[in-house]
Every structure is written in structure tokens, then in C-alpha cells.
Image (cartoon, rainbow, N blue to C red; front, side, top):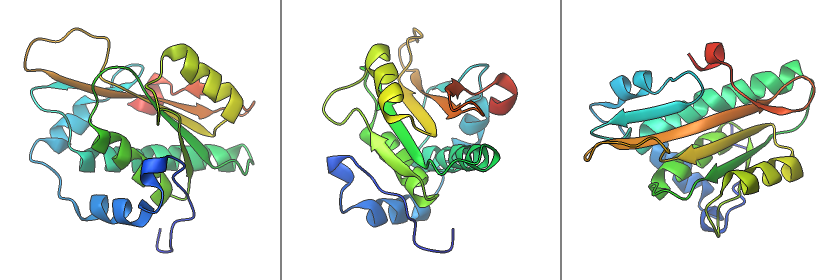
Length: 178
């Protein structure tokens, strides 16, 4: 968007840093392996990278922009003014810059971010509870995956859900992901 983003970060660590975070990810170059990794992330039910290196925060920012557009398209189709995105993360190790990059992308697109893992990581039940309480337009669950990896394999992923025409937050379909 050409204008100043209207979205907001709700997490304490992002307060007052929204514009700086957006500028950081807009200016950041792609890492050499990012395009290959981004293409390989598209799985049947989520986005997941399984490689010797994880996609860079810039790649996550760019993926986040595409997911934000999906959310805005759903909002338009469903005639809803809802612009809230919840971001959660599981208990596995995940780089904070990846979560920040997603939040910056959502905010840059004009969406409001509710980071529900500020104080504690989420288990599926707390994530589901937050989704029912917040009733977001979109929900992103950041994970290092339950999939066992060989030593030296970086697994990072996001489960993306968006409101359907009935107002229910549902996972993206295989066609939407791929």
C-alpha cells in the first residue's frame, strides 16, 4: 500500500516499533535460498520448510503479504469489516524475527495483529480458545513442527486459517495453499 498502514501490533514488544519493523523487512534482501525454500514450503495442509536452512525473515514477510491479501480478499467476498489477525506460536524453538516479520507484513497490509503468544507459547487448545474469543479474519499458527527432523534440518512452518462465508475460521484448502 502507498499510504501509511492502518494496522497495529498489540504485542508489547511491537508497540511503538511498527513502522521500524515494516521498514526493516521492506529493505531486507532475500537470502540466496529463499525463492527455492518459499516454493518448497507449500504442503498439502500448511506451509512448512524442511531444509538445511530456514527461510529468512524477508521470505516470511513476503509470504505474510500474500496471506494478508488472502484475508483481505475473504473480507471483501464475505462483506466483513473484520481486519484482525491472530498470530500464535507453538512451544518449539522459533526465531522471534520470523514472528515479527509476519506481524509486520500483516500490519503493512492494513490488518490488526493480536499476538496471542506474548507471555507464553500456545498449545492447540489455547490457540483454539483465542480463535473463538477474538474471532479473527485470519489466524496464523507458527510452528517448528512436530515432524522429526535429521540433525541439521531446520523445520519452520505456518498453519494459515481464514474466515469462510459463515464467519468460521477454517484452514486453507490444498488448492489455496498450492
